[in-house]
Length: 461
Image (cartoon, rainbow, N blue to C red):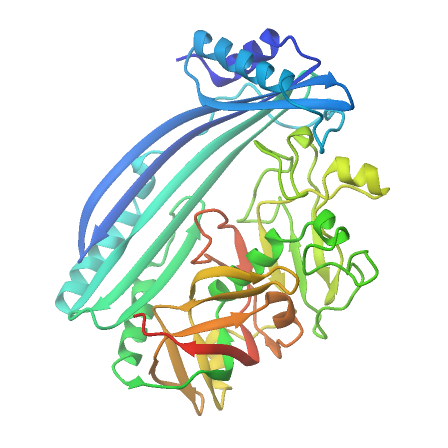
């Protein structure tokens, strides 16, 4: 098979437009799935996608044509480049047009072979999972779930001479434990780069503890409850806030970060606690590309014209104050500001040291809300979100969990929530449940909210 770098160089050489960017992604995947304490499927896949972005001068500015396809040979590549150029010439000026990113020095090994994964990545994990199956079988617990490892080798090249690449490993384990009669369920998840050193027995033990809590069922009405959100649950809320952090939308009055005077809320205090929400492409264990990869433009937060732009560690909230919003190079130029590129990881910390267990032990009466589900936006102006609880809401009394509570629909804004958090624990690497298909590299603390809004009781189980 032709190496992807060769196809990218051929695509650039075929281009006849004013500018051309080529984004290549060579991906391999391996997965295991299981149900009722038995493996059901395993598989491995590979794919190669090339995106050609052609730019041409048109009346009023610069147009772009973006076409992505799976490509294996020169004939398909020629068709792809031609389709991209035809799309560009048929388009009007792009709203996000900017000069293509010029070439700059990096330490990337452009010519190195694309990294890959295989089923062998589970060589240590699979025996541990098998042992968990055997123990679950004898104790009346039923395990369901899947493990997935994806390695994507990204390549970005352009007619300016720019060449960047990054090999991105992404692994996740999702595990559900159910009682023998399927009336009780608990969920746990782990994100990992390589499935080495995972504490499967510890994860299953935690889920079994939650199933034990659920033997005592407690019905509670809707209302505002003191609530502890573990790292995974607060992660799902912070990711949504991050995805809506468009400086352009704020300046045009379309999101929660809009200020009353027409500007943004940058500089406004969102929390009295020293919360820091930030991203760092070099964060140990959460590494991600330190340059922009954009195969489409959208939301005022990403632009295909910005492909290859260097990514720097960025504070979104610092010491409780909103510090940055995402901004494309085009919008930055139009507003006299600096571009701020989205980064593929997210970390929240507030200087806390308490573990989740210590926070439970210091709770007189409250809820432990282990995971959120079906999160949807209700009001962009306040970022009010709604969703359901699932696989575990528990009542804490006098420092101990005393039973499982019925599920609720919740209504909360993560931005409003930041101002009401009363305690922040120690930040740990976590896997968000709702959004881990799209965003898995997070580190979050458990947090305490004195008045989390459970708006209605849900009959879902």
